[in-house]
Amino acid sequence: MCGIFGCVLNDGSPAAPLIHSSLKKLEYRGYDSVGIATLSDGKIFIKKDQGKIDEVDKILNLDDMPGSIGIGHTRWATHGAPLKVNSHPHTDCTGEIVVVHNGIIENFLELKSELQNLGHEFVSKTDTEVMPHLIEENMKRNPQLSLEQAVLESLKRVEGSYAFAIISTREPDKIICARNESPLVLGVNHKGVFCASDIPAFLDVTNKAVMINNGELVILDASGYRIKKISDGTAVTREPITVEWTAEMAVKQGYPHFMIKEIHEQPEVLRNTLRIQDHYLDLLSTFLDRANEVFFVACGTSYHACLAASYMFSKLSFLPTFPVYGSEFVEQCGKSVSIDTTMLAVSQSGETADTIAAVTCAQQRAATVLSLTNVIGSTMTRISRVYIGTQAGPEIGVAATKTFTSQLSVLAQLALKLSKKRGKISQDEIDCLEESLQKLPDKVETIVKTQEEKVKQIAKKYANAKVFFFLGRGISTATAYEARLKLMEIAYIPSIAFPAGESKHGPISLIENGFPVVFICPRDETHKTIIGNIMEMKARGAHIIAVVEEGDVDIKSLADDYIEVPKGIPSILSPIAYIVPLQLLAYFVALERSLNPDMPRNLAKSVTVK
Ligand code: M6R
Image (tube, rainbow, N blue to C red; front, side, top):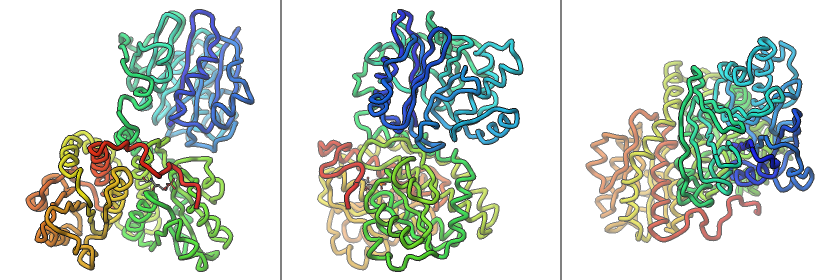
């Protein structure tokens, strides 16, 4: 997730100060590097560097650039570390074609090598850089092509998600934009036209917006905007709408809180996790394959992802792994770490002090440290041997939601990769799991669309409960732990989570009439046994809230309340779907209790002290 902005100003005023201030409003989409390109007197001017916008501005004075046309970018690294060289804008070999991009070009490696063979020189590690070179190549091959035609030709080769804004000295009066799956919106007023990843970028300047759809190309110039279909170039007529949002509402895209916005972003984020380059998965799984013992180390929600992953790796690749809390690692395992140890550290922020301390301990004892994080450029990426990004984009709500499901998706892909290497499960099973992974984003979308109202009602009913139980078996134990953490941290209801089988060994003594017990019940090998556990709880007066597979009449008939998840999700992937209604439950219970879910008391997004 990055932010792009561009403007064509028709009153001769400089574009750079507006691009700068608009990028600041998009900083919530990414903030590890920034860059601006403007056009003046047929020349391109570029300023860019790694760092937050204010830091870069202090050194480069971003406002001081000539020209009334320009584009800008605030970055959240996915391909290539947050370094100046990887910051946008990116150019072709001649420096005449300049591109900013939000999204992921899936086939960039193939395009890059093809272009390199044709003599194009690349300077960055980004996927984006292929685009200016593709346009350059198309214009070289056919000098009659306009910039617009060359962009259209180039888009035919690009697979993946994108919102592009492109300028060129060859046609210095315009910006060309294109969209597929990454957001793009136009703003218009009497002073000019603007393109951006999101409305807040221009809301100070205008509240007249034009939404751009997937598969559309836009030409912005002093006369306004023209929209065309990428597929066949047909013109599209679309009038601006008036946006009634305040600036604060606009950043949250109309949602009342970041947490609910981020819950709703999960289908898109999961789609992005499926675009991770295969060679990263291959490299990490090769390290795991060689390992004698593997520790999964993390805190909080990331620890729950590790717990779920330990089931995935055992079942799919027959690799025993040990999930350990970052804060306990040194005491619990420190002395047993050696050159033969492999650690996979998982952290949204990549800065959690306890996880970093565990990594440092492992490094000092010559272990191999791999990591999975959402923040490329974080401490974790700098100190681990190999890392992989979770592609979730910045998460602002303190409660982790989309980063949890993105971690799970990447971990599942890694386990599958290793499984293939080791040949431990049949090809049919692998194919089936891969197909299910591809379908998961849509299934999560269905859950959010169809269950939200129901979850709201359940939240109303139980909002005053004094305590909650969350129970699951097998991999659903991890879902239970995570659901409990969500409810506790934002709704302040003391909650208990256990593997359902363990509840008989003590916790069941707490149960009395009306005690809410949430059961996570995918239709997997634990289904029969969990019915027994539900009966035990019911017999003692518990109120059962079950998260079940659609059409699971057995459990629905036992539950006081139930939430349904679409059919056909394999057990190993179930936490990715089954956690979603429980994130919603925590959110709505917090609202019922008049709490702000984005800012729970005593907590910080990133815990950088031990
Ligand atoms: O950035 P990390 O993933 O390392 O953070 C770990 C925990 O601090 C984090 O998951 C925390 O528990 C969240 N508040 C959970 O919602």
